[in-house]
Length: 245
Ligand code: 6GU
Image (cartoon, rainbow, N blue to C red):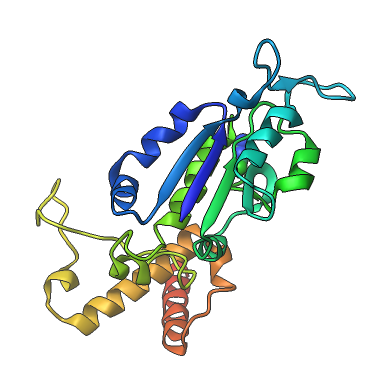
């Protein structure tokens, strides 16, 4: 996959591609990237890329000129062009699954009050928000989306870690423990040391249900639970109901 990021702050993006798992994926040739500073495409005296909004209001808006020249330079028309913005549709794991199938992705990082709507109309295929809060810029949001997508590509990370993780079946993950056995006088749950695989699976399933109930009850309503998991959920809620009495 080739990822291109159009930004006014390349120094915010570069470290993500040159560290950790992303660095390895780039080295292996699984992911290619290009960071483009669209200020380089400005053709005015001060390399100005933004201006006041027509109609008034606070802040500055990215002008169409330099940004669209940058987009033209990479033949962005017809490509998957993603514009992260707080006014977009909420980005989900399902979107990440869909995007991982693409050969090329282009990201536009907005700043200030946003970018001129005509560039969005002309080039952008997806407007995504990464959550209900406001960030200063699109760079951090782009990195979040790129991370969620590229880790799903074959060869980037161990397949086993992908198969059983939060959101695959719309439940949160169970808690993990590793050595040492004693830490701050807290011990590891006995079942994990028992060698009883069925017992361990059962405990982990229960923990996933409990955690999801505690932190994301909204996810339970559309989780596609097996009959076995549904029974467990009923058991847990019954138990908690009785404890509350
Ligand atoms: Cl994609 N951008 C910005 N600036 N803020 C956000 C966001 C994106 N998603 C949530 N908040």
